[in-house]
Length: 478
Image (cartoon, rainbow, N blue to C red):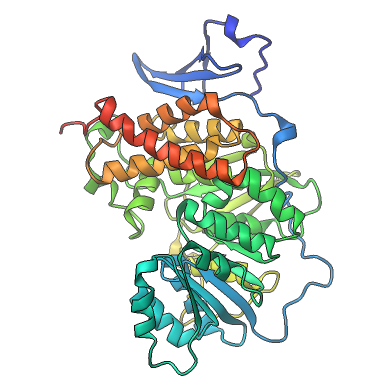
C-alpha cells in the first residue's frame, strides 16, 4: 500500500483496518513525513511505532547484487589453493571457516589471521595453518602470543591493535577476506579490504546494516564482490544465480520464530531472560538467541537484504518457518518461487562465499545430505506484528535509510545487553530501540561518512543506556 500526503503536519490521524481486524492509527510526528504507528487489538493499544520519512531515491546506494548474480567473464578459480584472510578467526565464523580450510587444503590456504583476545586458540590456529601475518586487537596480549609461538621454526609477522587487523584484511596475497568480527569493529577492516580490491565473504552484519550507504558505493568503485555468509542471504544469493535483469519480484526471509513463537502475546510481559534463551531449534549465543525471540534478527536481515539485492522494502517479506530447513526464497516476475534448502549448518553458506562461483564436493560424513522423507513436512505462518514489534521498527528504519539503520542495530544491541543483565524487562527492548530511533530523526545523515557511521553507532549505545537510567525502565515484576 502506498500513502502519499502533500502536507502530513495538517492531518490529525488516519485509521485503517488490516486483515486481522485490528486497527492501525497513524499520528503525525514533528519531522516532515514522519508518523507514529499504533496498533489496537480490542481495546488495548500496543505502543507506538516509528514510521520514518519517505526515502529519497537519489540517496539510495547501489545494491551489491541487482537481483541477479553473474561472475564476470573469464572468472575462474585458480589451479592452486585460493589464499584467504580471516578477521575474527577465533569466533564462530572464523573457526568454522578454518574447519572448511582444513577439510579442503587443496582449495584454500590461510595467509593472514586476526583475533581479539583469545590468544590460546589463535596460537593453535597459527601452528596449524601457518599464516604469514597475525594480528591481535588486544595489544596487551601480543607478548603472550609470541611466547606461545616461541617453538615455531617459521614464525609469522605479528601486528598489534586495530591497525594489525586492518593489515590482515588487506594482506596483498589474499583474494578473499572472511569478515567474522562482530559489530562496528568490523567496519574499518572491511573498508580496508575493499579498498585493496579483496572479495568480501561477509559475516559482519554492521558492514551493510550500519555501513551500507558508505560501503556499497566503495565496493562498486573498486569492483569488489560482497558475498553473504549468513544462511538467509546466502540462500537468496544462491537462488538468484543466473536470473535475467529485472526478474526478481519478491524476497521471502524465513524465521524460526524464536523462543516465544507459540506463546500468546499477552504472556510476553511475564517472560524472563532464561525464557528468551530457550531457542526451540538450537543452541546459540545469548545475543542472537534473544534477537531470535524478539525477531530483531530478522528485521535487521530485511535491511541487509535490501542493501545486498536492491529489493524495495515492500517486496521483502518475513515468514515463520519452524523447521528452519528452507533458509529463504525468492519470487520471480512470473510468480515462480525458488528456495534453498538444507540442514541448519553455517558451514555451507561460508563455503559458498569462499568457492563462488564454483561448487565444492563435500563428504557425507561431515556434511549430511538432506532427507526430505525423514523431515516429513515443512510448515509456515505469518509473523504477528503485535508479538514482534521489531518488524515495524526495522522496516521504518530501513525506509529512513542513512544512519538510522545503524542506530537501530546499535540500540538493539545495547538493549539486549541490558535485558540479559536483568536491568530491563523483555518488552523494554522494543521501547528503548523505538525511543532511540525517534530521538535520532533530527540528526539523521542520509549519505554518511565512515566516521559518521561509527559516531552514531556509539551515540545510539550511549543514548539507549541512558534511557534505563533516566526514564526509570526496570524489569517487569513476575
